[in-house]
Image 1 (cartoon, rainbow, N blue to C red):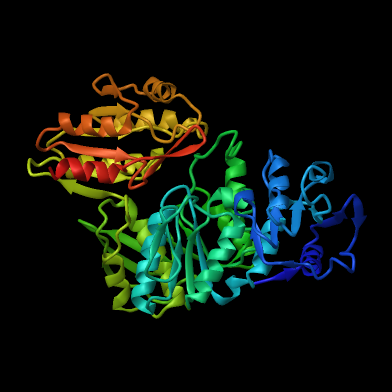
Image 2 (cartoon, rainbow, N blue to C red; image 1 turned 90 degrees about the vertical axis):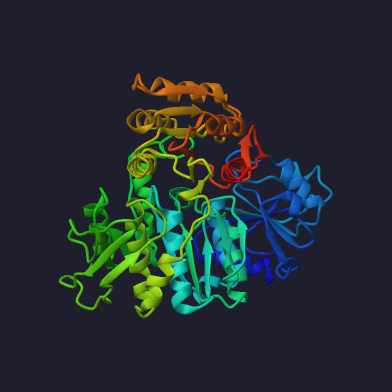
Amino acid sequence: MTMTLSEIITVLKDAGMFKELIVAGKWHDRAPEELANRTVLDLSYDSRTVKEGTLFFCKGLKFDPKYLTMAANQGASVAMAPADYSAQLKTSEHPDLPQVIVTDIQKAMATVSRAFFGFPDRNLTVIGYTGTKGKTTSVYFTRHVMAKALGKVVAQLSSIDECLDGETFIPAHLTTPESLDLFRMMKEAVDNQMKYLVMEVSSQSYKKSRVFGLPLDIGVFLNISPDHISPVEHPSFEDYLACKSEIIDNCRIFVVNRECSQYDYLAEKAHDLGKQVISFGSDQSAADYQYRLGEHGYFTVTTVTTANPALPKLDGDFRIMMPGDFNVANALAALTVAAQVAPVSEDFRAGLAETTVPGRMEFIKDKQGVVACVDYAHNYLSLTASFNFMKHEFKDGRLIVVIGAAGGKAESRRKDIGRALSQYADVAILTSEDNFFEDPHQIAADIKENIDNPDLEVIVNVDRKAAIEQAYAMAKPGDALFMAAKGRETFMHEKGKDVPYQGDYQITKQLMEK
């Protein structure tokens, strides 16, 4: 994998992103003859990983030029930036480092990365999921069903972990990786003989151009609700919806929840763009694929071909082993997708029943009859669905919830957490989630302020491990514990650092197996 400076400029010009090349204070519209064949051997936006021959991207709203100086001193052969940093480069060991100036550094990084790694998406069937909730579960359902039907040729990118060889899973750090990392991983998946990629596509990935230029064979829109509205995420619901709906512009087939609150707008946009639209939903909807709920994870699917006569038939009974009716819609989304890429068979049923998601509605029970559930639920929709299931399944005891909220973003979520707790919980222990730079006591106070159930016992314990231990210590046989938001994550975001954390599931399992 190499590119010359001249090739990089050509790719950027073709995309309308090239402004000029600056070398030692002189501006050029193309690479000078002596630099045209300068070879780029690697790409990086992290100065700590730069080595000889690296193209370094100067990205970030508050990019500090000192990192460009570091990159130059470590052997970068080319820099790409949204502005001229010649003054800063004078302090480096390589003041004549070529700077490719672009109109949009995030989009340019995506465009160049895709070309540098050989357009790996062209060798994969790429399936992207977006939605306020359910992306991760749906990706897991889809990968399991497809892998069962097609073999170990399905790669996965999710907010929990990544799988690039059909077998090995490694922890993830972003819902959707930065474009450079995304195309690098896609290239690795292709090298590993993968044929399919199932991935989460967050609203931020479109807003921040992490998936810029990535075509999807199938784009799936699960749902949307007023979440992620904050100064650092989306300033308004309109912006949130606009970013999420970009999945329609970039997909060939659009699969959408017929009961999504914005279905009419989304379907209209998709039809206007000439996309094939396939819908799924309950038997109370007018969806192409409809589910009817049974008990204990069973549901029946019916295919309605009135609008789409050529649709593959999915009729039959299915079961998921993750409790909660709210997961059935995600399961049907996965079946809908799988039916478009693989022959419908008994493998679909088996793959769905075998699906587990680390940290998603994982249950542990001790010898005394106390039940604990660990889940990544963190907004009103997912919390109320989970709490409702817990209260239904464990009627005889109290629901004890350990919960917090992320610092520095989505402040409106704190009101929703307070509302959900007021509706369902018997005891709420307010603790740390990912505080970032915010005081966890203030976050807890904000949640508590929105709790209006006088019978709800509220405890504040910002040490998350201690909070889980406290919840278990107060539990009696028949009680159910619910640890929200962190799942199996083994880190906490604290003051700009990832602080090691044992994990909700790990702590709970250790306590209950003593």
